[in-house]
Image (tube, rainbow, N blue to C red; front, side, top):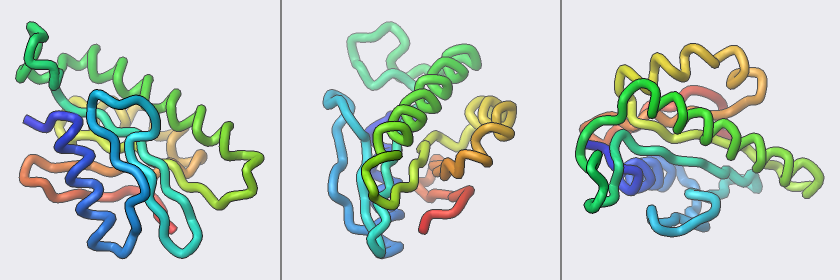
Length: 141
């Protein structure tokens, strides 16, 4: 089960292996930009989501999210990266945004249905597989 914290950890490992410097890596209890990394003067800001509730007190703890829950989480992630793009638009910084998600069927299907919006916005997708490997769609730097 890929909880959000594991998704963040796997993406940070991938970024480290590809010469990014991790500036920020939040835990699931912290609010803000989940991952901030930099390489060659380009800042990468990533919003991450897991495939189940990481709250052990939740009745859904450890159970995969339904397709409708995935749809909601992907919508929240898309809103968050849109917010980041808007915030960074006038900063003068070179910024790339990304969304990190479990590479399961529900997440891939949901994102596939909105890929026509994701690609023109140059949102990088980080697909985290059960074994911890990461597949990337889009241009990092």
